Amino acid sequence: MTTIWQGLVLGSLYALIATGYNIVLLSAGMVNFAYATFLMAGTYSAYVVTVEWGLPWPLGVLIGAVLVAVLSLLMERAALRTLIADHRHLTALIVTIGVSQILEGVVKVLFGDRPLSVPTVISSDTIRVFGGIVRPSDLLLIALVILVVVVLHLTMTRTMVGLGALASAEDPDAAGARGINARGLGMGAFALSGAVAGGMGLFVAGNTYADSNLGHSLAVLGIVAVVIGGAGNQLGGLIGGFIAGLLSALAGRYLGAEYAQVAVFVLLLVILLVKPSGFFGAPAQRTV
Image 1 (cartoon, rainbow, N blue to C red):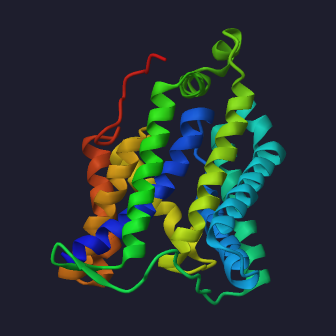
Image 2 (image 1 turned 30 degrees about the horizontal axis):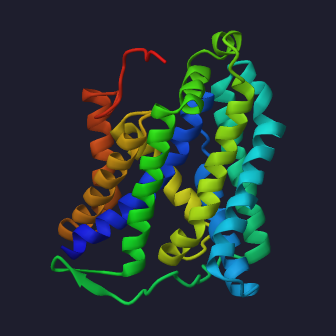
């Protein structure tokens, strides 16, 4: 059971990255590959606020959410807006990769390569749950990721703002003709994804440390979670993340650590060959 808990913790990280990808994908019609690096920036924000400044953790969550939301908005305004308006989404994707590399380099210059410890909100002493060993801070991370995904899913599917965002992603010109502010919703999607990354940075840092390589290591596995669950499906991304995390943990436990990620990418290849839309993806055009 300890391996299962490890897999769920890993899966929550993958699902969190998939969630950030899906926020922008559902609203702006593109993948923001810099999202994982924004999450990394959120962990360093948590370190500065809680360790260097000594402020309480709620301020760490708030400051991180605002800071990374601003970073995400700046990227959208300065580098992506024209590309998205011209439907050059592949070029926009490449730009986000470049932004992630720049941000990672800036973090390494400011803080170095050494991972920095960030205190957890609740106890990090191990406990036994259902026969397995896990930390309460890890259980909190899993619960928060599930909560964030469920709230975002309900927002996108049950509110006028969410449905307007879906319509904007499908056809921004037609959405604009119906009075929907497609550009504003796109900006809101980038700000929201940045706020999620920055706000969750404190809880992630308690599990992974503030590590400049975190974005690089999670970015691709977040894509795997999206593909497994189905692009644009928030609940699918959550389940895809947990599937990837569990498979990685089980393969590492029973086959060896070197097979942990290999098993995940084998599953990815199988899904792309058998069901390219993912387990919960909808290949047909949506009605919004």
